[in-house]
Image 1 (cartoon, rainbow, N blue to C red):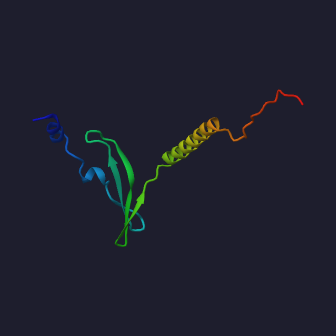
Image 2: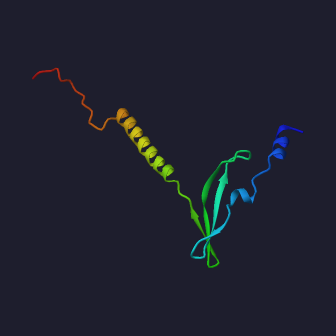
Image 3: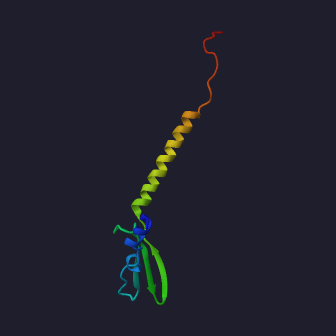
Length: 106
C-alpha cells in the first residue's frame, strides 16, 4: 500500500452536503439553494459560488461576485500598463532623436 492509497482512503471526497447548502424558501415562494466550492479534502474552508433560485418550476443561477477581487484585478491591470509604458519610454523615448554637432559655429 502506497501513500496515495492511504490518503484517498483516509479522506473521502466532498459529498453533496458540503457543496450545496440547506435550501430555504423566501416570502414570495422561491426556493434558494446556496452553492460553495470546498478547498482541499481535509480543510474545512469553502468559497461561495452563487445560488440556485427555483421559482415557478424554473431554476436560475445567480453567481456570487467578489467585488474585492474585481477591484484588485483593475488595480493590477493599471499597474502593469504603467510599468509597460515606462519600459517602452525608456527603451525608445517619444521625442525625436537629437543628433548633430552643436559645437560648430558659423
